[in-house]
Structures are given as C-alpha cells and as structure tokens.
Length: 257
Length: 257
DNA sequence: CGCTGGATTGACTCGGATCAAGTCGAGTGG
DNA sequence: CCACTCGACTTGATCCGAGTCAATCCAGCG
Image 1 (cartoon, rainbow over the protein chains, first blue to last red):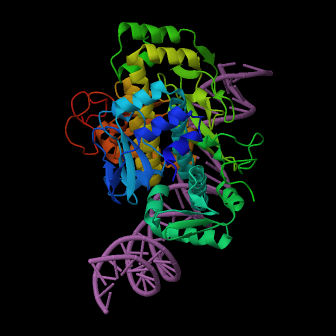
Image 2 (cartoon, rainbow over the protein chains, first blue to last red):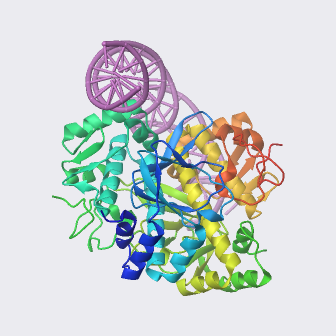
Image 3 (tube, rainbow over the protein chains, first blue to last red):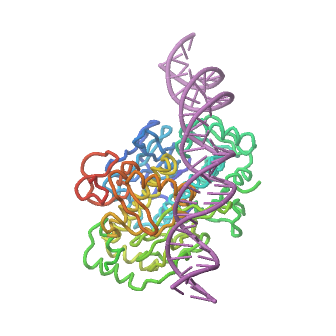
C-alpha cells in the first residue's frame, strides 16, 4: 500500500522521484501506537514532527469544567505543524483514536527535507494552509451552522479528505470515530448527535454505522451542509462558479452524481 | 511611535538591529485604507503579504444564507499568512474595521527577509503558530463555553494581544469593534451580546463603551473566561502551575491583581 | 454469560434566538 | 445652532433548538 503521506502531498504539488524517495526514507521507521494514546500533551515541550501513516488521531483540549473539545481530526497522511519545535510548550494535546503507525521526523531532518527539496516545501506549506483553512471552516460551522448542517459539513470534509488518500471504497469509507468524539468535535451532546444522524439517515443522504459511513447521495449531503471544498485547496478545482455546492470535472469527490 | 509589527515580533524572538532595520525598510510605504474596505476577497488570487500597521481588520466569510462569520481579528502588528501566495485562491475575505495603514510585502521580498534573517523567520513562524493556536482557542470557545465565558474569553485574548503592542493605557484600551462584529465573531446575535455585556458590567469585571473597553478586574475576567494565555505563546511565561488563571512574573498582562 | 461502553429513545428544561419597540448619539444640512 | 437622520445600542416578550436526565438496547469481550 502506498505511503499516505506521499500521496497526500502529491495532491498539493508535483514531487520529483527524488523527493518521493526522500519522504519515504524519512518515514520508514514509524512507531506503532495503541488506541487512546496521547502522542503529546498540553504543556509538553514539542519535539519531532508527527506524521500519521496509519490510523486516526485528534487534537483536543480539556477545559477546567472537564468537558473536552476536539479541534481537528488527523487521518493517514496528515502531519502536525512543521515548526512546532519552535514552541516552548504545546497548547493542546493529540490522541490516537485507533491503533496507529506514526513516523517521527526530527526537526533538523524536516528542515533539511524542506530546504533541499522545493516540491516538498511547497506541498508542506500548502498542506499547512489547508489545515488552517480547515480550522476556520470549523469556526464557521460552530458559529453559524445548525447542528444538522454542522454534522453534514464535517462528513463532507472527511469524505473529501479521505478521497485524497483513497480511503473510500465506493461511497463508503471507514470512520473509526464514536458519536462521543463527533459530539466533542462539533460542540454538541452525544444524545443530540445521535438524533441528527438519525435525521440524516432519514433524508437518505448518508448513513453512519459503527466504524464506517456510507455517503448515499453526495450532492444532497453537500447541499444540506452548504459545503464548498475551496478551503481544502486541492488542485484541479472547478473553474467556474461558487454556488456552495462543489462540482466540476475532477473535483475531489463530492461531485453531484 | 514604534513600528507595531517590529514590536510584536520582538515579543516572539530576539531580533538584531539589522533585522529590525530590514523589517522597517519593508514596511515604510504602507497603503492607507478606508474603513469597511476589503483587503482581499474569497476567490481572489492572493498576492503580497499584508501587515497591519495601524487600524484593525477581520477575516470573515459570508454563508449562502447571508449570515457572516468572523474568524479572526487583526490588530496593529498582525499580518496575514506568510505563504498565502502559494494558494490558487483565497478561502475567505479580509476587511478593515476602521481606517488603516497596511504594508504590502511582495512574496519574493518576504522570502528574502526570512532566508537572510534567522530571527525574522523564527519570529514569523512563532507568530503563525500563535495565530493557529488562536483559531483553535476560538473553536474551543464556540464549542464548549457559555456565551458569558465566550465574550469574557475574547476580551481576555484581545487584552493580552493588545498589551504586546502597548495598545492599552491603564486597564483600558481602544476597541473599535461594534457589537454586531462581536456577535458575528462569537456566533451569537447582537441582542444577546448586548445582554451579556450588561451582565459583565454588573459583575464589575469589565465595561465596554463605544470604541473602548475598560478591564476593571482582570483576574475576575480571566476567571469567568477560564482563560489560559498559553496558546498565545508569548515569551517569559509563568514557570509553574496551570490553573486556568494566568499569573507569574511578567506575564503578558492578565496577572491577578 | 454477565459486564461494559457506546447507541438509542423519551420527557422535560433552559439558554439563546427571534420579533418588536424604543433610545441614544454622532453627523449633516438648513 | 438646531432639527433630522441613520446606525448602533437597549430592553421586553415569546419561541424553539439543543441540553439534561433517565431508561433501555445492543455488541463485543473477558
């Protein structure tokens, strides 16, 4: 199976054979981690850059009241911030969802990869901009979307991102997130997430079962969510309008069917 | 008056006299912009890096329904993303609040500044990490804080950030944001913001009048907000505990009084 | 085969939105 | 200098989406 990290970066910039090799070299010795294991905790001194090769993780923060807020999901191919090593301490924690294989790239090696290989630098920077766009999209969701739209929007996001690393088979893809995690990510209660998922199931747009989602009507889901994938900054996007519904030739997955 | 951009970056890393000079050179010809003017719009091809020298701006997005979500406030000293030029198009817009002076640094010059001056690169990267931390903090606020906490938290954030560029005089600082903007930033209605501000006034923690805030009891405000400034990554922070209330020698402003 | 953690459903409550009047204050022009 | 105007701020009454509390169901697992 292809290296998901390489696959994802290729979606952002052209990489030479040398660059691909360098990336593979840098990630040949991943660490195997158990589920629900903290990669790093708030307050820790950051070290190497993490690259998810297999399995999922999420960034989160626990409030004084004990509630948790998840701020991002990391899927295979994703990595945490490039310059993380510059910080004195982490401002949030990162935890695995499922068991995972994670490469740790020391800061010096990361710097070398970036300065020697223009394509890698370019792809990494765009990836980072896409991550920031995603954070902003979450803020928009939490601030101005109803809970139905919010859930639909997250599913669209994960679907498109999953598509970029060939995670889906047909319209379904593996989603190892419990309803509790979804609730903590979307700022809702598990009870309410459950009701919304039922509602989405009834519209026929999508269906979530333990461990996997089935997007039955991508266009309908995107329309419910008001989803526009522009913030993910994939290459080859629709050349034309901004309708709120993604479309166009070779869009990253949520084309109207 | 000092260059706010330089002043802010000095809060992140030591800069040599040469580096300070280089930054001042790069920002000596700012453009003067009117209030409510879009610096750049969603869908535009990004160009130079913007640096706010005077006045405020905000990043925002308009949803299909017509509602607006503000995702960040830019105050003097702040700049927009370093590598923005790599993107094919903007995923959000940026608008001035008040009239402003904004420097535009071409991408090539920015690259030169960063590669020739290690201190500048370092400070800019930390600034970017702090911006990302701020986005995550907003997600936490919207997802898991009550509206009272949310408003208090934003005020704490702006107070600390303002402190870094000497924006405050005593416990007050100029805040050119209307209640409508605050509402669009915090995911609430103007009506509700207004009631919350009244509530905060009654607790004696702070007071917001047209154009300025007065933080009467910083510690109380921080306590209401559950504010921990760690995500802003200022240097010289408390060496000790994580209590949810910032403290310690020479913290960035919200020390308990 | 019972235990445990997630998923599901119902009944009730409440925070914040919505709708609807005002009020205040800074310009603007006569 | 004052009346007019327009946008922003305030306040009250009502409504509804989502939270809370509480059972119950279900699947995987020791």
